[in-house]
Picture (cartoon, rainbow, N blue to C red):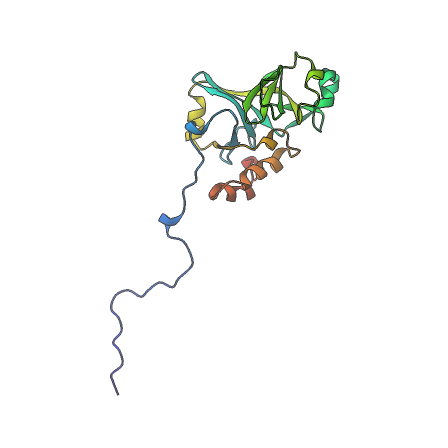
Length: 217
């Protein structure tokens, strides 16, 4: 009979555990300042503990060397549009209330609408794609039948030059593409945050099952 094989030298092999090697884990991609533009979304990361923006989804209206401006989506208030801007209430999607657009100039009203306008329409200023800013000093009857719907925001979110780049570097925000339906979405709060995060790729999508507001943990 042949002699039994000699045992292999060296340390015993580790059993397979199914775990990825550290180098194989994809990095968490949250975008950069180059991704911030009109029509993009700034989505609050769980590391953002500022109560005003915890769990927020911000639609960017303008980004330039002078700063960044946007409105927080999905934060309906108790103020009815018909009580303040009665001429516009019939064009607004449900719920027909002002949405809290941010902490800046909360007595200022901004209005966003979706419309497939191939040519310039008086009273509408394109933001990105089918999303437009609406001139609330104009005639709402002139836009009847030309809009898919509109939403009115009280206040806005603003960043001074250099402020947003610091917050992005700290991991406070992820910058992701928007969809036209985001502006008029019936979802609010954590539901909207989860919907936006859930359609991303990689580790951002995994975060959709986390708590958007770390103070709620």
